[in-house]
Image (cartoon, rainbow, N blue to C red; front, top):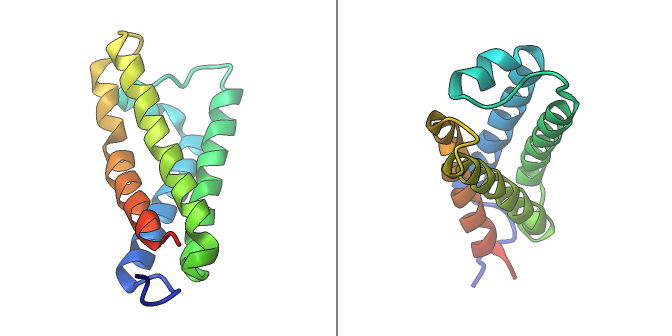
Length: 130
């Protein structure tokens, strides 16, 4: 079913775009967390050690996605699938917190990119899975 073991141009572009967006979010969140998280009603206050660790992990997944786009699809499909599930897991946590009124309703808007890119790269990974 798989015609080539390389990512298609569209899939590789999607992986790179997702990765670079995650790295950009990491940089913004580390430099100015209030401007990124505060606008959407997400918590960012001190002590923010867990937030910083989570943001760095999120950025590391982004770097991994950029690297995965350069590798053979068969070697990177598990990582891409895992990164997609982490993105969708973040969405699930935020939506749960909004539904229990622990976060403001506008916090759900912050997950739009994670939903779109998470579903897209999950579908690409599942299509490439052996």
